Length: 241
Ligand SMILES: C[S@@+](CC[C@H](N)C(=O)[O-])C[C@H]1O[C@@H](n2cnc3c(N)ncnc32)[C@H](O)[C@@H]1O
Image 1 (tube, rainbow, N blue to C red):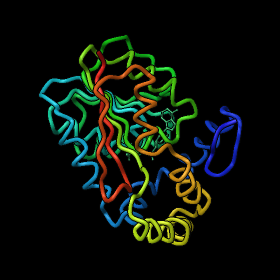
Image 2: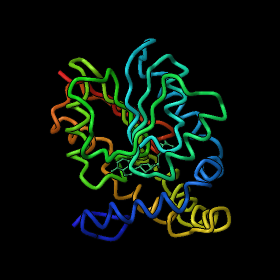
Image 3: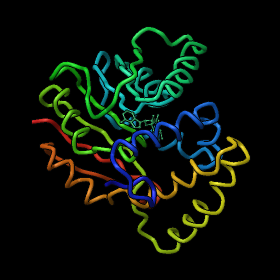
Image 4: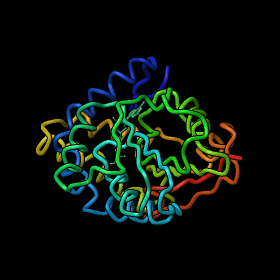
């Protein structure tokens, strides 16, 4: 059994429930991100991509790419981007946005499970995953497959919610997460449960050190991390030997 928010479910059941969450919220996903984070998720994502060390022409796989925020930023930095996500609705919102912006060249969209990537070994310079790993049932399999598809010397970059250090900030953040976010979810997306899941899944996700250990266990080298906004998020990076 594994965590789906505060519930324990079978891994296949988590995959199904996570699918239901993102199919339900896809149309309002971007608006909800702006409202819930007061726009700050854009700064986190910009910083995340700007510090990936992308060189023009690098091949980048954006896993759990959803509506394509990371992909668009990476494309603007000159990467040749492959977006992979398990959810058809999230991908179609992302693809429609990219088409509206005239972003077609250098951007491919694939419906793919991060636990079983259909890409050749040693084919990417970077793998990014933003706010995605938390939702994956078998994180060890996903990390192992990220390692497989990276070229030797290629780098993985993980942006994820993490553990807040300051007790006062943690209390404020808990109130926001459990009192405000599900209500906003109900009002804007007609779905409180998915945003309750979001708040719970963040608390169940491994903290900074534990995620770094999982990355080492998957075989990554030079694992390092730093916090954003007092640990609300963290960026973990590592290299394939
Ligand atoms: C919170 S969204 C993040 C989207 C985007 N990366 C962003 O930062 O806005 C999480 C995404 O993970 C995707 N996802 C969940 N489980 C997955 C899996 N096993 N394989 C690939 N994508 C998955 C969901 O479909 C969803 O689009």
